Amino acid sequence: MEAETAPPTTSTTWQPPRFWKFLQWLARFLMPLVGRLRVSGDVPEGLRRGPMILAANHISPFDPIVLTAATGVRRVRPRIMATGGLFRAPFVGFVMRRSGHLRVDRRTASVADALQVAADAIKDGCVVMVYPEGRIGLDPTMWPERGKTGTARLAFLSGAPVVPIAQWGSHEIVPYATSFKGIVRGAAHAVVHRPVIRVHFGKPVDLSDLIPGVPGAAQRATERIIEGLTETLAAIRPDEPDLPHFVDRTRPVDVTRRYRRRPTP
Image (cartoon, rainbow, N blue to C red; front, top):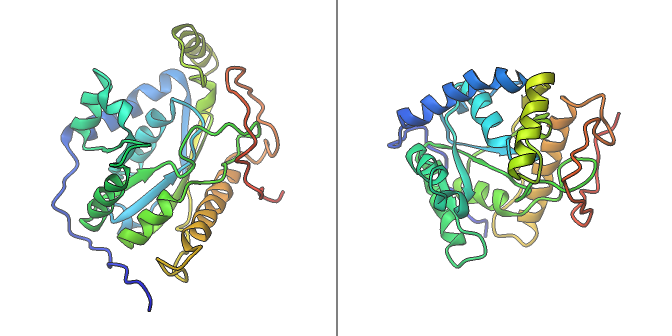
């Protein structure tokens, strides 16, 4: 018997806080100080306010600022699923809570509850943004790694479409190792060189033929999501098909989660 997936709804009781809208405006205002933001692709008008899952690649600690600015450009107000450590931080935690973002306490018994909370928010008409890789990627090529199944399970629970959003260039602003010296050095380099920061919204990933609850369905859905994210990233780094031109020396290397496919030239 096929598992039922609740149909998305277009009505919502949650409204983006003014504080979150202000932060999106502020990020767009500050981005030109450290880089040149270029946003391409778009979200279908019917999905802009949800329900929808935005699946982003993760390459730098600066990614949230880039994505905050880019989603502001496209007038999308996502609720970001983020690690509980950010919510416990003195200032950042206040910002995350005030903006309406969603807390995930990894490696705890409540992590499954967070997935259900996010699914309920999406069913209520929200846009939720996730990092399907589950961490900043450590593959030296900086293409998306194999994903965790959380994004796929969230799609199955909510019935919402998954739209990949790829970014490139934020690794030139803030390094992987966020020491004070590293941040200052990275920011100084960015202010002088103002690298181009590209963000591209891709096409929704087709998961319609997969049946929730069937063994292997979540893994197959995860592979499709990573594949869609990889192809979306390929559109904005055509001149860097192998190693990136800019190499962050503080980033460790881990190829154990290398995704088996790469975009074709």
